Length: 101
Image (spheres, rainbow, N blue to C red):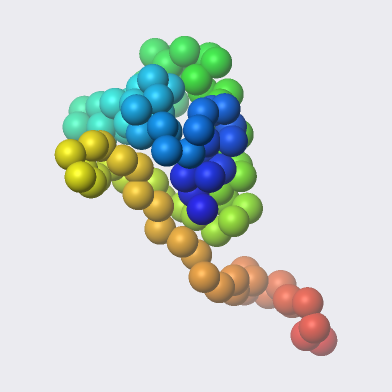
């Protein structure tokens, strides 16, 4: 599912997302930030605005589907972003969820 969302936003065929230039650029940025232990607010100024906007949309859509905490992992020789998925929702303390009184 994350791959489908990424392919839609990047406008590339699903089978080609891992080779896409924007996908690989974001992989490199994730690795650089973690390697340098950089402050994201400072580091993001180095990233092209168009790429930031695409990835902002991707992250927003992924969060809506419960996919969070992307990290880079080599899979079959390619660097890929792997996502954790939230499977449940617990409302913050003091808030009532739907159906509760």
